[in-house]
Length: 208
Image: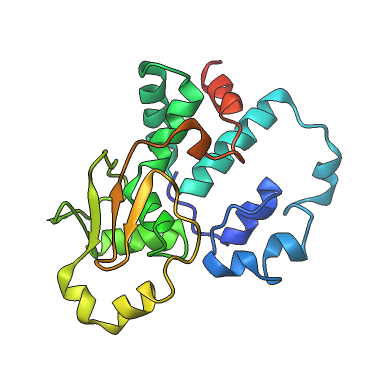
């Protein structure tokens, strides 16, 4: 199955909560979750009681859609989480948070993870001054994420960095306002991980 190309807001309505897939629009009354509280699809299906499998699947899909990860890649992340020491669910969330496209988004350089993924694919960012155009690259402690030097003279760069920080910067990242670069100070701690995702349900889904 290829990447989902339908309306992003439909995914939020299916999840029943905001996945912040549309940037600033998610914070306005135009947000589809605010305007239409019902999930998409046949209304008669909403009366059915969700099974345990359905609840586990829905949580897994929500995490995939929030971070924009394909099913095969998500399963690979889960395998790594099982092999790593500690709680598998937290290991999974920590891997997802370390993706380069997520870091670019959390630093405020993009309005959404989807936009951040596009920026990385187009080669706008460097890791330790080395061109990195792989959105799934997992940052490590000490890595510095910076803009391509030639971008800094463009209107595109000025528009993207105007008003930064646009949202709170996670404690495991540090933002250099002068250079408009970010550094990975530490790995995400347990309290830095997504509270809106129940990682226990995802682990149980893959443990069947």
